[in-house]
Image (cartoon, rainbow, N blue to C red; front, side, top):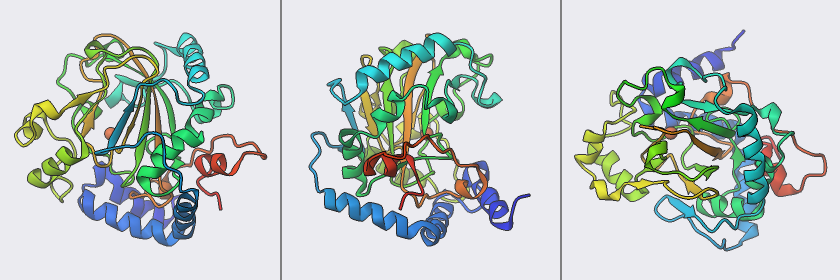
Amino acid sequence: MEGPTSRVGRALDADKMAKLGIRNTMRMAKLYNGLRNGRRQRMRVRKQRRRGLEPRLRMEDGFLVDDSLALPHLDALLEQADEIIAERGGQAPADDRYRAFFRNLVKVEDLARWPALLDFVSSPELIGVAADYLGFIPALSGTLPTGVRVVESGKHLDALAHLPPRDSQVFHIDPYDHPMVYVIVLMRDCTDRQGPFTWLPASASARASKELNYWSRGRPYRLSDEEIYSVVDPGETRRLTMRRGTTLFIDTSRCFHYGARDGEEPRFQIMYGLTSVCRSDFSESYMPLDRPPLEPDADELRRLVLDRAAR
Ligand SMILES: [Fe+2]
C-alpha cells in the first residue's frame, strides 16, 4: 500500500510534472528532499570542498567531451561491455512500449558480475570532474534515470520507427535533479547513422528556455526542432559522433538534448546518472531504490558514489 507521501509525490511527478508545471514541482521537491536529506547533502558539499583538487579536465558550458581514452578502468569497461553486448545485444526486453528504440541491457543485480561498470564511475578522476562542476560529491541515481545503463538503441528494435521522432528522441531538459551530471561512454564508434546523442551547450539552452518559457506550467516537456531552432542557431548543436571509448560529461538538467533518433544502425553506449541526494523530483518517495553492490572495505569515495544513504 502506498502512503500519502508516495501518492502525492507520484501525482506531482506524473506526466513530466504537468500538474504544477516543471519549475514549480522541482522547487517543491528540492525543499521536501532538503528536509529529509539536507544533512547528508551538506556533508557531500563539505567533503568536496576539503578535497580541493583541481581536476585535469573541466566541464565548460554544461559539458565536457573527453576523447583521450585515458580515464581509469576504461579498457576493462569496454572489454566487459563487449561481453554484455555479445550475450544480450538485440534481445533485451523493451523498457516500455513507448520507447522500444532504447533498451537497457543490465539491471542492478548484474553489476557484481561486470565490476568495471562500477569501478569506472567511482574513480577519483571521473568523480573529480563531476564533483568539481557540481560542488559536491554526487551519488548514482537509484530511481530515475537508472544509475547505470548499458544501452542499445536504433530502428532495428522499433516497430514504430516509421513515425516521427518521439519521447527521448525529441529535445528536452531532464527534471530529475538540478544540477546533475550524465556520463556517457561510447562502446562502439558512433556516426550519424547510429542516432548519436545530440545536445545544446548550457548557454544556448538557457537562452532557448527563457525565450520559449520552458518549464512553466502548461508548457510542454518536449520541444520540436522547429521551436528550438527558431531561437537557437543550428550551428550550436553538438553530436556525440566520436570513437569508441569517448566519454561525455553533461548536465542534462541544463542542456537541451535528445538521442537515438534516426538510428539506421545499432548504437551502444553506457550511461550513468549522477545526482545530489536532494533531488528535484519525488521519485524516491514512490519508486524502489536501486542499491548497487558495495564491498564492506570500499573506500570513502566509492561509498559516497554507490550508496545514496552514506553518512
Ligand atoms: Fe533526457
